[in-house]
Length: 223
Image (tube, rainbow, N blue to C red; front, side, top):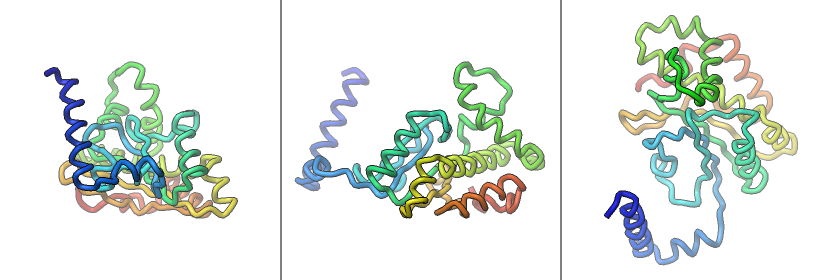
């Protein structure tokens, strides 16, 4: 059996186990998709949204890309956000990065990686914006982890600045955006305490990032 055939066999086993545990499992999935959450995360194969928050299929809407970026010219990203907000009516958007992110590391290692360098340029811009703060961190691993946190914070702002989210807030839709980060070493998600639920919150977070307010306390205490 080839490796790809093994995936098909694994799928059959999973399907059978799901039915044995709940005979209506797939029937219920077909009938509705009603998630309360949109997850914007990294494509890293070790960070699967449903797995790390222990939710069944159908309960979380997911967008993943390299280094969990929200780019205002990325039509795929904007389409997912629009569908989640305007059709599924999610109440929460979670931007979740992870410590030791290879995409974040590649954005600042001064090597050439090809096409992806254009995508990662957004993180390099974040690093340049906060260069003095990052350079004050002596340990390279800690410096990378702090940049991972800053990247999450910048993406929370980017989500909040989309016309989709601004329009939702204008019409009174309850919608919150949260910045989290996942630890590969222990499987724990840290809340970065940068949740926003309206334009005033968005302005406050933007100002904190711009003026380095509370920067030294922006992340989790332990990794």
